[in-house]
Amino acid sequence: MRTWGRSLVVAGLAATQLTNAYELDLSSKESIKDVARSIAEDMMTFYTGNLPGEVPGLLPDPYYWWESGALMGSLIDYWYYTGDTRWNDIVEEGLLFQVGPNNDYMPPNQTLTEGNDDQGFWGMAVLSAAEYKFKDPPRDKPQWLALAQAVFNSQAAR
Image (cartoon, rainbow, N blue to C red; front, side, top):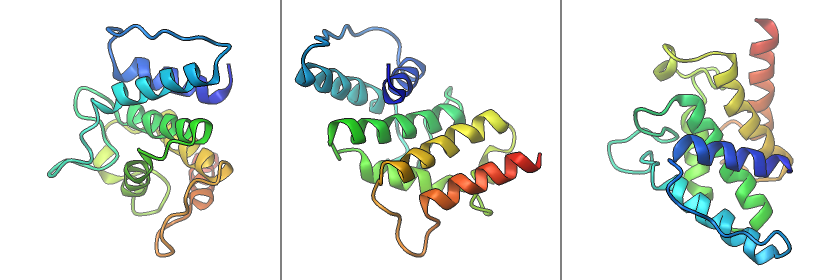
């Protein structure tokens, strides 16, 4: 299973209970895309970061910050492999909102739950964004590769 499949499944399992059955025909690209779309839609039913008064990039309690990073990374993979841009604006907003003051995914709103592994999920998400040529952030914002490098540099120093 390719990386996108693993991350989509991990985020899907982390963000949902197994209440839906997906019928998948591995010999059909359309079936694979249809199931991926259904999983992405199901995952996004849990996301509230795009609603008024909520925090962009975050899943609500009881989900952890790392799970939100996994969700963002999964949606980048989903876009890359399916061409479906439906969630891209939400992903860009979430990824840029959670960067923290040093642009290294160590935001003050996560100091109680933040560890290398948590930060790593966000770093891998933006590394995928850079590798897959996800739409560049606005010029006045940190770019995907710079964010991934900042995560690496902060972790290497520790």
